[in-house]
Amino acid sequence: QQQVKQSPQSLIVQKGGISIINCAYENTAFDYFPWYQQFPGKGPALLIAIRPDVSEKKEGRFTISFNKSAKQFSLHIMDSQPGDSATYFCAASVNGGTSYGKLTFGQGTILTVHP
Amino acid sequence: ETGVTQSPTHLIKTRGQQVTLRCSSQSGHNTVSWYQQALGQGPQFIFQYYREEENGRGNFPPRFSGLQFPNYSSELNVNALELDDSALYLCASSRKLANEQFFGPGTRLTVL
Image (cartoon, rainbow over all chains, first blue to last red):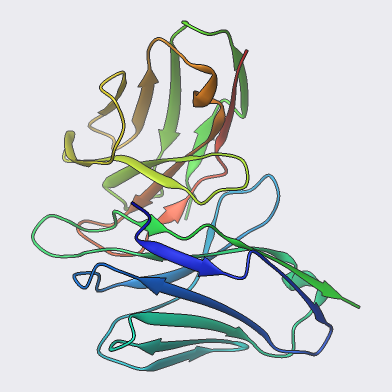
């Protein structure tokens, strides 16, 4: 059962444009939503994360928008640069007791930023 | 601060063999999680170790097993390798009961 659905599978953006990647989840117990960036041959690197008590979080050019009622969240990359070209994964986890950090990932989005 | 390291980088095995992958957690981290990432897919949670005990398991058969040592490093063992076990195996570490997971570079396992 895929609990986190990510779209689009691939995205091409011009330099300076806005990249938008969307995720939807099913498990209402999820309460931590990170985004990871992965370059070829590397492990995923944590970009930014949000908890459901806020609707938006911004760090530099990266913004997460969160819609609890729709069970959706998205990553916006402003002023996209060729160096942002990578695969992006959304993820979610249920946290409480001793259950922390067991991430359920989306399928990934391959972002290509053209110069 | 030393990041998460994994060894070996690459590994080729034949079907039916056994393999052991190793992970050293980031300094100050005592929880280790293992993930399997098939080509073109998102990582899938295998299991997590905390205080040298398994602390949760994903949908993987018992031939996937692990250990955590007193220095918080960890091993992933896979018995009776199958072709579908070919994947990138990722280790992630975190502080005690923390959300943020920090991943290593992974071990690329190829089963022929």
